[in-house]
Amino acid sequence: MQAQTQVTVTDDEPEDFYRGLVKNRLIIPGGVDGAFGRGAQFEKVLEAFNALISRISSDDDAEFCTFPPVIDRRIIEQVHYMDSFPDLCGAVCSFMGKEAQARELSERIHAGQPWGDALEMTQVVMNPAACYPLYPTLTGVIPDGGRLVTMLNWVFRHEPSREPTRMQSFRVREFVRIGAMDDVIAWRDMWLARGVALLTSLGLDAIPDVASDPFFGRGGKMMSVNQKEQKLKYEVLVPVNSVEKPTAVCSFNFHQQHFGATFAILTPNGDAAHTACVGFGVERVALALLKTHGLEPDKWPARVRSCLWP
Amino acid sequence: MQAQTQVTVTDDEPEDFYRGLVKNRLIIPGGVDGAFGRGAQFEKVLEAFNALISRISSDDDAEFCTFPPVIDRRIIEQVHYMDSFPDLCGAVCSFMGKEAQARELSERIHAGQPWGDALEMTQVVMNPAACYPLYPTLTGVIPDGGRLVTMLNWVFRHEPSREPTRMQSFRVREFVRIGAMDDVIAWRDMWLARGVALLTSLGLDAIPDVASDPFFGRGGKMMSVNQKEQKLKYEVLVPVNSVEKPTAVCSFNFHQQHFGATFAILTPNGDAAHTACVGFGVERVALALLKTHGLEPDKWPARVRSCLWP
Image: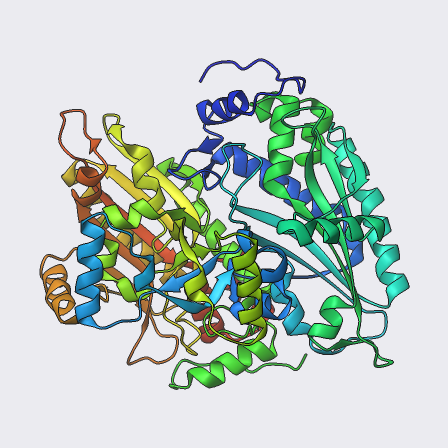
């Protein structure tokens, strides 16, 4: 493997960055945009960042759990996901026919014909947001002071792109706070400051900003405006492809009582609980580190390495 | 949490076992069978077993990588997966219409009507076997002596079941050997002995056996018979739900030149390479340990704990 010079974030050439990632076997291209394999060094960085998050939050005493990449289809029906992001969804469909239909299906595939209409929806969909599978498990009265849960889950968004930070399938290290409104907002604000400090300590130019989700269609534009006006979503942005258009590497969402009311998650006084979540796109953080400090983690600045590998 | 007595593997009551797992927050039930959340203690066991595999195989010098839970749809088309296991597949479908169709979709979902026919197949499918995404990346001539790659990937099988070891979505720690026939078979045989020894060292009653895949339909029965006659698949079985019907916790597949020929993976002399894989169902191993040694890992026998947490 060739020696690599330090890459500075001053260009706007995602294709060059991608080629470098592939050349250094950080990314292993698959046949589909945004669904590539991750090499050993990439995973080492990702796991180190995930462990760093665990260390800095260890006093918070969050409960850890893991959910699979697929979730109950009823969740996205109940939270009205398909009203807002139908184009990003991934419903898992399977073959449920008998032998004759299976033979026909096989012949169609061998002939190179489309075969989606031979399938039916299963009970599961790709998980589009790390925290979704948690809420239905919280139904009932939460303890005084609320709850705090953390997860590292794979999520899916149907938005194929050659831009390496725009993935279809990626992992999110998530924290979810459930409780009274003031507690939840204070917790979100604490993490916003902590997230910026954490990323800055790794030598990244982290900038917080009010943000909005990519709601579908014309009606969606108004929803984005409302979301920004109410400051329901913040992001921390870091330059990866360019300084002018930095990339969101973590997001902070205040859901008000949306999930509390939908899944009957109640505070001790009987109100629907408020919830907020903080999610780090751990692949994006790894890519931001690789773009900022170069494609060879062994040669990163000592202060960055000592944060990640103490 | 109540003290838990040791569970011995002499009953045939998967429902009781499942209830114990839920009560001890090892499993967090979702709304769909076989797609449950995993609690912190469960993950701790799973990660310890995965790390143990890495330790015992560290001298093998396998290249590590990770693939996402979704893969290029063309892979399952090219390897003829749908001929053999159409009922287990999970094709990822999404909405690709305009605003008017999105409104209609939304109305149908709100009215509780089926909505699968509003979707189209994407370029990706759920990965049904940990090693599948690797093969297309190996096209070309392999080095003398072949290659060895290891992965921990999520896989999907559409077979909902209340039996806790029969999951729709689970992780497989996989090793893939690519090379000349004799080298590949010798490697498979080495891992068969090593796998039995590894599981036995953890206090599990591990038994190797010739096995076959659940090929679909009547034609599939003959394929299973052929597979057994040619001894292309072995499994190591451990009692979980019963002693009489032990559960496969790892499998060893010799693919002959199937993947080598399909993806033009060539040995230096120009032949299609032979391949074999070894996969540990890491959730199943965790469940076997919990069934054998009890639902509280802190109270497991010292010799088992020292293997997992040295």
